[in-house]
Amino acid sequence: MIIIMKAGSSPDQVKTITDHLEGLGYIIHKSEGVERTIIGAVGAPNLDKTEAAEQLRAYDWVEEVIFVSRPYKFVAKEYKPERTVIDVRGIKIGGTAVAVMAGPCTVESEEQVMKTAEAVSRAGARFLRGGAYKPSTSPYSFHGLGEPGLDILQTAASQFDMRVVTEVMDVRKVEIVAAKSDVLQIGTRNMQNYDLLREVGQAKVPVMLKRGMSAKYEEWLLAAEYIATHGNPNIILCERGIRTFETYTRNTLDLAAVPVLRGLTHLPVVIDPSHGTGRRELVGPMCLAAVAAGADGIMVEVHPNPDHAVKDGAQSVTLEQFASFTPQVAAVARAVGRSL
Ligand code: PEP
Ligand code: MN
Image 1 (cartoon, rainbow, N blue to C red):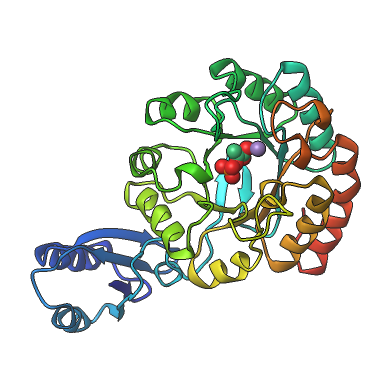
Image 2: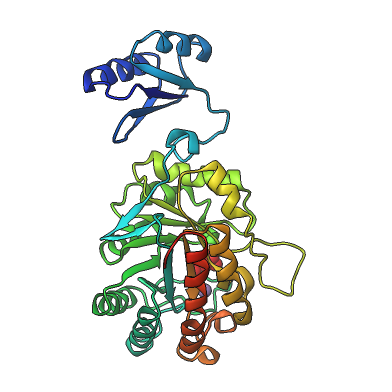
């Protein structure tokens, strides 16, 4: 359940309530807003929930006690009425500006990343994406440059004042990837890797959680709840397409995820039209649609020479194509009261 304290209640009054809840066997998470504190209580209580709620309502400084019937709490909209804005070393995700993330699928060389970073930052991207550790369906595919790849991303990002978004796949690598990047990406194949979710929950950098390719919204939000309950509230959800019967596109990009998630959670939502469609000619139009629908960001695969990309060339746009549709994305952003 969620306990909303009256505006201006003192730390002592908040403590009285958290002590009471802990006494009943609840685990407590507090969200301290500018005006009021909201307490989330989870776990198996020693007392019936309705009785517990009645006791809490008896305190003068409790405004409201809400039961959340959904299985996730900390990522639920009810827990935090205002939307989460994540500050990534001074660049925000979830505010009025739409975050633009761009870069190659895979870090191949310093020259490739430098060239891409220069072009996409000029076109308005503030986040440099790129995989140093690559998940692959086939064990025979390229698996990334590893740590040297992280260094290349860092060098390029610092040159163009960008922030690095990169995937971590292994619990043993969370520390090093977190030290050398700004946002940890959890890929679609790992959305339900609970050990990894727990580990990034303890990291000090934000996490971008991609939707599992056949995950329902509830499963996705529960995966986010793992990260939140392990201490990391800075979570970005990324829709990257789901599996359907359609094979013309690589996946089916579920743009309804944007308004659906806006109704269910306070977390920011980013759209990845590259993996979402698998076809470069569809990436620009889907970026426009994503921003029109209210997405907090877009993440696009961009390559200086997509036909020679090690991975995902067919869905990667050229530097020129990226620069040609970003002004249109900016125009849509303005039309819906946002900016790039
Ligand atoms: C990627 O972003 O390059 C990637 C591997 O994404 P996904 O996990 O969505 O397939
Ligand atoms: Mn890719």
